[in-house]
Each structure stands twice: as C-alpha cells, then as structure tokens.
Image 1 (spheres, rainbow over the protein chains, first blue to last red):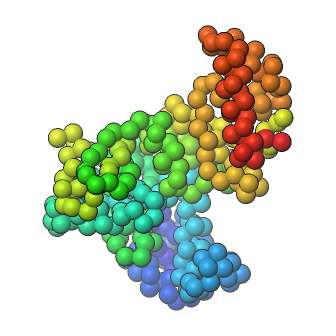
Image 2 (tube, rainbow over the protein chains, first blue to last red; image 1 turned 180 degrees about the vertical axis):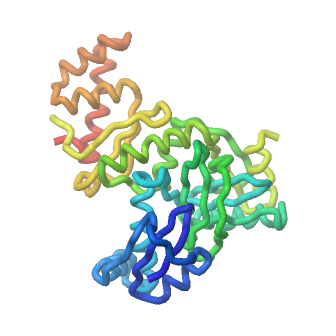
Image 3 (tube, chains in turn yellow, blue; image 1 turned 90 degrees about the vertical axis):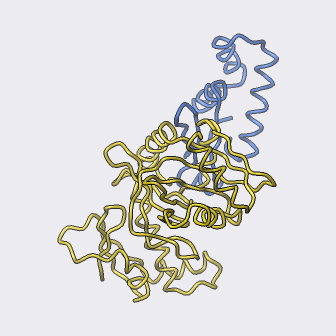
Length: 236
Length: 87
C-alpha cells in the first residue's frame, strides 16, 4: 500500500504487484489520514484487463491501467475533471494539448516543438493527462500514465489551446468552433457509463469548449509544423 | 418506433449530442450530434410520437415544406436504425 498525489488528488493505492509503486515514484507522497480516493484492483480485474489488452501485457502493467481507470472514472463527479487522450506540453507558462488518432504522430509533433523552441518546452504528459477545472480555469496535470515513451512531468499548467492533429503534406492550422470540436473531443475521453457522470462531465466539456480555443492542424514532420502551430494558436 | 432506453441527449457548447449509457453503450459506442430539427425529432421519438405528428410539429417550428421535413425525418430515422438506436 502506498500514497500518491496526482492532479491535486491524494490517492491511497492497495497494490498487488510492487511494479506500480515504482511506476508512480514521481507522485509518491507520505501517508495521509483522509485520502481523497482509496483504490485497488483485484486479481480478477487484473486478469480481465490482460485479456482486454490481448494477453501480451504483463499483469503488473495491467494493474496500473486498472488503477488509473478507477481514478479517472471518478474524476467528473468528485473532482471536476476528466481524462483526455492527448499530449500536453507547457511553453511560456501555458499548456497546449495535441490530440489525434493513435499513430498520427502526436509524439513526433511535440518533439518538433522541442527541436524548434528548445528546452523551454516541457512535456506535461505524452498521452493521458488529467484535465481539471480549479477556480474556473482548466488545468492539465501530469500523471504517471503517459504512453509508451514515458514522457511526463509532475506539474500542472493552465490550458491555452486544444489542437487536433492530422497528417498533411503542407503545414496549416485553422480554428474550429464547438460544432466541430465537440465530436473530436468526445473521441479522446472516457465515454461516461452512467447518468450521474454525464451530468457532471458534460458541463465540464461545455465549459472547456466555450473557454479553450480549438484548432485543427494539418502538418508534416518538418520543424515548420511547430512554428505554424505556435503562430496559429497565438494569432501571430 | 421508439428510442431504446439508455440514450441521453444533452447540450454542450450549443451543440446537442446523444450518448449511450450502461447496456446501451454495448450496442452504440460514440456520439451523435443533433441539429435543432434533429433535436426536436429526437425528443418526439423519445416520447413515442409517430412520424406524421412529428412532421407536423417540425412544420410548426420551421418555415419549410412537408416533403423536405419528411425526407429529413426518414434520413434521420435511417441513421438511428443503422446505429441500432430505434426499436
């Protein structure tokens, strides 16, 4: 058993395998008396998770995924938050989220930002950040779960823009309205499974789409892609 | 013709979207976006209204002709049937 703090939420984790404790090392905290969440995965749940992943996943890794899902499904109702499948980087003190279908090249694109803008670009989370409203502002939080590259930082950043990436021969970016963004953002979140979650999650998505500008970036793998994205989202 | 249970339509940033909950999410996974007319048709279908009455209701709200509304209705219902949402 150990404690972590992610997205300003203290979580008491009852683990089966020691792996998950090492996996969460950047987020470990001293034991607290009243954690916000207490979670654990049963061996049955871990076995089911392995089956879901196609049986090639080691059980200790499946346990981690199980635990993260248990945290994330509780975010809308308890913490005004939600999991978003995207990569978030921090640059000049604000966060940019890049979302795309798997394999489109989110990781490649954020690597271009690092190449172009240098060490001033930090990866908050490469794949599965937690988004959370605090005092009426949307923040992205780093978490241990961040995709196979392992890019994450235990930090938070106020969100400036959400950018949906598509492959293209040339680089161009366009702002999109909520009519287009709503479908795109739904593909990147955990589908709510009950009415209570819908009633908590939808107002969060509503506020996200009203307050955070959304864009579609068509891009290739040249450094210019990062510049076009940055200029487009800063209206330069 | 009635919408199966487990579907909810909600507004997000001015857009109406439908999601499936619980058992319904096993037969439909994703979202459907509704425009104003589709939202009205959806709500009437949820109440178990029949085609003619729904078309009347749409005609009272929007300045258009019956043939257009009927065609819109049929297309929308086909989409819902294709997604296994109507029973």
